[in-house]
Each structure stands twice: as C-alpha cells, then as structure tokens.
Length: 257
Image 1 (cartoon, helix red, strand yellow):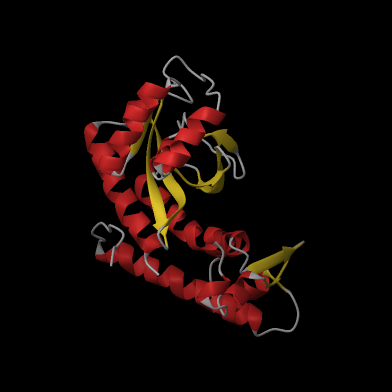
Image 2 (cartoon, rainbow, N blue to C red):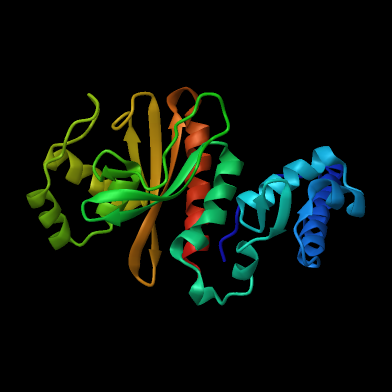
C-alpha cells in the first residue's frame, strides 16, 4: 500500500503534537457530553487548556465541521456524524480532502483535486499554500483542459476515440504566450504523459506558475487528477522530483479501495 512521506520528528515536537491531539479529542468529548452549547471559557476551565491554545483548536474543529459555533457558543457539528458512516457513503470530495490537505502541508504549495466536466476541469477540493507568494484556486473553478496539468493528465487518460472527439469539438484558447493550443503539439505532450504518468504546464495558464499533474484512477476509470501549482522561483529540479514522488504516493492512496 502506498504511504505518505513523513519527515523525522524531534521528540519535543512529537510530544507537542500528541498533546494537541489529546486536547482535540478532549474538547470533542466534553462538548458532546453536554446537552447545551458551551462557551470557550467553560471548555478552557474544565479541561485546563490555555485560552490561546484553545482558540486555535476550536477554530480548526469548526472549520472541519466537528463543532458548530453560534455566537460565542460551541456545540457538536455534522462532521461527527460522518465518522460513523460506512466508506460507501463518503463522496469523492470527502475521500480526497484529507489527502489534498496533507499534500499541501508537506509541500506548502497549492494543491488541488480536479474532476472532468465535459471538456473542462473543475476544482473539487483545493488547499492554498501559506507562503506569501502563492497561487490560489477557488473551489468550483472551471477551466478548459488544455492549459492545466490536471487537464492534460485527464486528456491522457482518454481513449484514442475520445481524444479525437476532444480535438474535433474544442477551440483551444490561448491564455499566455506559452499556452499550447495546436493539436500536433498537444498530442505530443499527451503521448509523453501516457508514458510517464505525469503532466506539466509551464506558464500556460498563469505567468510565473509551473504545475505538475497526475491522474487518479478508481475502478479502472479516471476519477480525477491531482495537481500542484508552484511559483517558478521555487520550482527547481529537486522540488519537481519531490512533488512527483508525493503526487504518485497520494494518488496511490486515493486509488486504494
């Protein structure tokens, strides 16, 4: 089974992470056990958690829908119900979200899971880099396939007949001077992606951005594609190799039943 790369963790950092995980579980259990919503000060007093640390943990739990916030009060959120659901009840976005988030944390570059919609791709799940210079992808954003690494990865997964239909039915617009629109040149890139498993774009949709994409196949069908968008000033050969390695591993986790 594929695994996500983990770097060595120093004992002090590991201890801090364990404490945060324990506190997070304590918060959930304490809120769930009470019949009424609780304010942060009640939770802090009961569990002995500093308010500064509690604020961050509560915000994370609210963001992930494990808690609901109404005014100053917190109550159990709908995310807790998902923990009791069978795997079949989880959507593709549910499955992709934690892996996209992990990949973004590991690389600190914008990471997105795209799905095909006709001859476009749509951002189903996206996590933006936390660096000052970054590329952002709004969830739900739809873009033609040809200028994106994810789109090229999905084009490479089409049958030859479907690919012929794509070229017959689309007018491929130019977004930058680097955008590849000619059928012959695009077919050459698609053929290379079929060999290597990876698709690349170099300033084809946005200037200054290099992207790497990898298709995700579930049940023998292309379910979507993962991509990482990197400002070119940070995208050296070492970075590209690391991105490709992590994309391969993350796609493997999504593809595993």
